Length: 170
Image: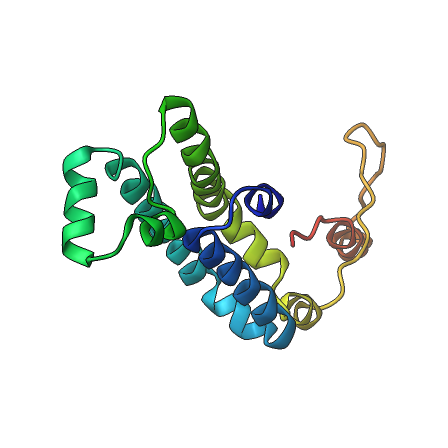
């Protein structure tokens, strides 16, 4: 996604995407636990920013809104173009909106489907929790048709054996 952004024209809203990516990577490098704690907040920040970019880029295409931007902000057309606000034809607008839209969809999928499993996989203490529960014993399947006879004296021994063969769940 960042490759696609870097191949297009450089504008302010794409620079902010790159800053967010840099912040994401540097936080991962320097403070892993802080990165894990703030990851959901980061993803929601990216979602909100992408939605804001999409709304502003799309609404700027209307003449009244473009005029309101110029009058309200007192910025020239060149400065607004540097920010990323300019008029496009239908094909150009589709291509301009494609990158933030795809990025928004991917991030929403990440947050909705993959965030929680990733957090469980990347938990530093998940191996410590498994060690505290004790070692698991390998399970040998017992066939239901095995012919074993149980006598009164060997009942306790058979209970120990059956407990040994029980499957422990993680």
